Length: 187
Ligand code: GLN
Image 1 (cartoon, helix red, strand yellow):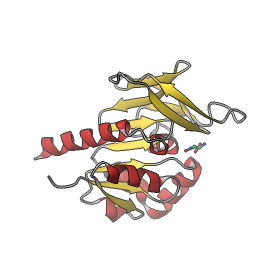
Image 2 (tube, helix red, strand yellow; image 1 turned 180 degrees about the vertical axis):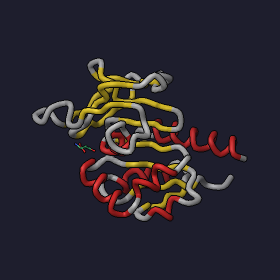
Image 3 (tube, protein in one colour; image 1 turned 45 degrees about the vertical axis):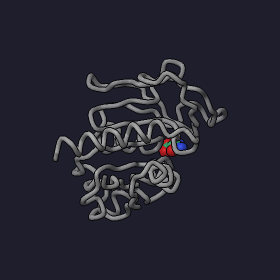
């Protein structure tokens, strides 16, 4: 089977860790810094980092419009989730609150119950957002204190935490699974 070609947005943030995890699962990865690098990709990861910086750099390089046009599965984590929300690219119907867990207890790890998983998922939160409001087509897959932190809407998967920073590859596997399914539909 051909390796899946997955882009990792590499303007800022944790792109190397995502790329490494995707490669460990057999994908081929491309660091995306220019709009035309999205051509021919089967999926895209928007990593964590700093969402204001992301938004600024993406607009500067024309990556905002390019990501809006990109019609394949997208996985946004932490700042990547913020970038996709209603107030930014408007691709996922969620309202997100930045730095939602407070600045003092900004970073923590916890075990999440995830819809469809029997074993809990270890999740690393770093100055993380949470989802405050979800549209009707959004499926919440995990919560912390009643706040959604993992959700899916169609081809979009968003996480408030950093799945690339643990050894647990299940969310990246899920993402690659949705990429494979999207490929089959096209074939
Ligand atoms: N606090 C960052 C922001 O609001 C997100 C943090 C992260 O991606 N780890 O953009």
